[in-house]
Image 1: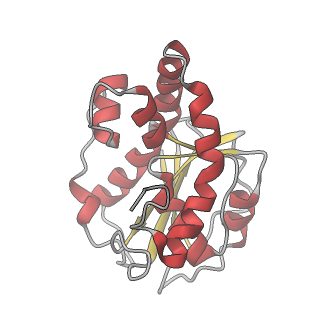
Image 2: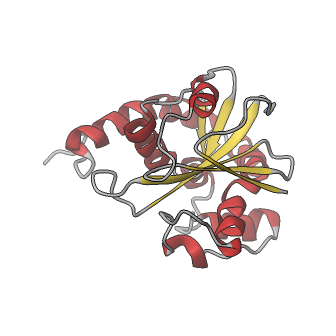
Length: 204
């Protein structure tokens, strides 16, 4: 089931101790492209989509309260982008996070394909479409295809996390993921301060 809200989530929704989160924006440059939608799922088959931006604002007190809750694990795919745009537009840098893209790069070293579609296909035997990725998310009214696309981006993240954790444990790499995820908020701050293209650890 897909629930669509404008401006904020209702204050009577109860979420589990882990939630999948994704964002949709006008593009992939935080310095230029505004945040339009935040998607959330507890991994129970239900998604909650919140439209934000020019028509609905960014006050969203209930959403911000949820994002601030450090007791809830927040599962992203490519958390680096989502965290940065959430910080820029909602003023919050969520903690207690997990990134399936980072986990995939540590676990699935036999491939260079770490997109959500590839993870769904290989790990869950589920085919999802990414056709709406480049559509106009700033519209006041989202299409049924956009809603379905945005929902798919969070529906399967809990299952993907579980599968990746099994591989990481089997390959004895789980200990590498923990400090990387702890460093990720610092990486996001560096992106927002202008160091997004520079590898500060490189020799040059």
